Length: 317
Image 1: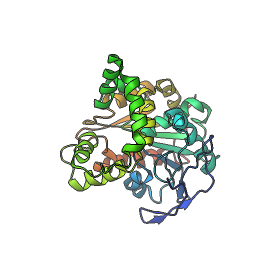
Image 2: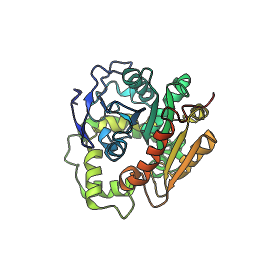
Image 3: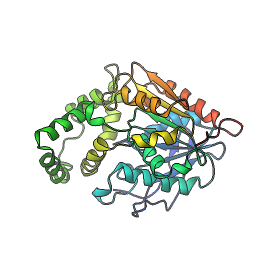
Image 4: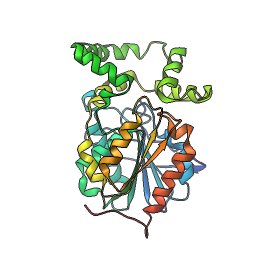
């Protein structure tokens, strides 16, 4: 996988690559900055995506914030280390390394979709002292604090295999088969489009939206996807939610989300308490940032304006 940083275009402006950002195990992380004024907004994409996932939101914030995007390990242009490090705990530490590199003292708003939101929760557990000081806001989109094996088709299948006692054999077989399967001509199939439409979109999604999402999703190497799978289903960061109560939080849910059902977002909001605001998008699925980006953009811009100097900059511990 190419691990070199590059200069790309987002929303009509040129990104500045940040060289030398690495995880605590030496894995290189691709990081870019756009803009110079306002609070720093760090975007954390979800599983199988990359930083381009946030293009609509980056365009909406243009001129309002200093925008940071990064590719999580194994995704996009970032590197890939030991498969055993493909955990939410590790992506939380990676996020900490990104913050140290791009915003060692400036106020930061963390934005996360799905696995990106889980990374933010992991960071809150690892570095609670940052929340209400360095981190002044959080924006969580279709994510979960844990217990995904109880809801959603993938989680239910995982739980059924565990109950039947065949889960270790299935995971071991998938780990062995992933490198071989990765070179087979399975990408861009009709079944893949059906699965992407079913898991990420509602029935109203256009073929162009589905094909674009399929291209990004299937671009993730299968060994990376297999390595992260167990951690995504077993993670539990519910203990970190009280830490987020120190800052303004917006939680976005999608009424037809099959991967991280809306009930997960509601539980996050309730656990955080008065500092959290819930935005429910009824006729949307997991890819709500793409299909209903006007709603997501407006909620994010409201949060960024709230935490600007002179606004709310953190709540007491």
